Length: 103
Image (tube, rainbow, N blue to C red):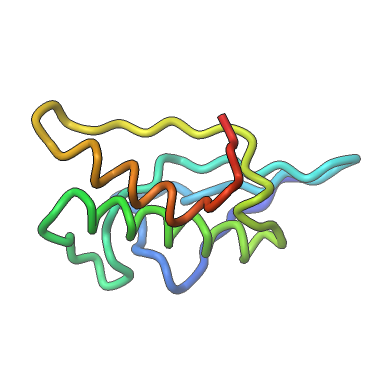
């Protein structure tokens, strides 16, 4: 069974799509649509590091609304625009994931 995941403390999507879908059966999977660094009110932080931190906060909210945690993450892909501060993005990731590695 598939159900949309739409926590109220995450910015709404830019168009008519679900932020994430929770699929249940013998196991539970959550697939995100691509999470951006917007605040719940839709505003965008000024630095890429703040945007990355907000993106990880949103992912944590999506997982929590799905009954999962950051330690359930198996794989993620991060895109950073050339010339932006990659180190700040990695710091935000490390703060969000702690010792959990993921892929």
